[in-house]
Length: 342
Image (cartoon, rainbow, N blue to C red; front, side, top):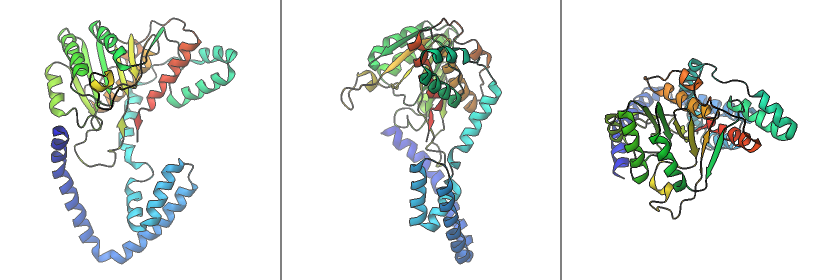
């Protein structure tokens, strides 16, 4: 709660400045109130017709139509500045720019699709569509280990981190001090002292009550590089675009992911909401390259300390043919590429 109060207090000056700016604009526009009101009402009708004609998610369209119809002037103003998904465009531009600079680091997965097509045509069609949507090819993985509970993954995470020789990449929605996170930090700090490149991305709003700039400074002091995703330091239209990914990559050889965040309730050390049931998994092989890419793509979008694309090319290169189950799992987890949600 202290962290939340501190962040809110920090945002208050920015909010007050914005409110003052709005009041000055409204005061200046007061002389044109009648014309402005008519103009916004006309825009409201145009926006509603535009939304009806769009091939868009129904819930998104209905929400905006209800707002505009019930409050034409306010609704039209909001849609003008926030509608049509303008809210995440600047954020997306950074990510797209990062993606372009990395270039093409993947080989085609068409050969694997052809093999699956002989076994299950419908599955091949589905996986081909997933590949087209994510931009990632279908690949084999060497091994897959499934964890039905977060605590069963904890020990393997620690062991993998202790074996790191080149780099450790960590990207999570929620980070919170406790047995889980503190143990990982101790290991990562030791590896950083040995010369391992250790980097952490956390979602600033997802971790607003548990991880702050002060905690980030402490990580940096231990030799661990750290950046927040979409920092919450001012009220802005892209505030609701968050990074829900859960990724840990070690040396491009092993990747952990799933549903668990780096907080004690996810390994049932604490019980805020009773017994916590969430899954995790560990993969090795060529599929690890996808996770390396996703981390590097975001890191380079929001940090000045860029990671070279060669790191991705060398990731997950020790791949042997997996069985059908492995291929399906590896393709399924590629959906994490859509990890930025609104």
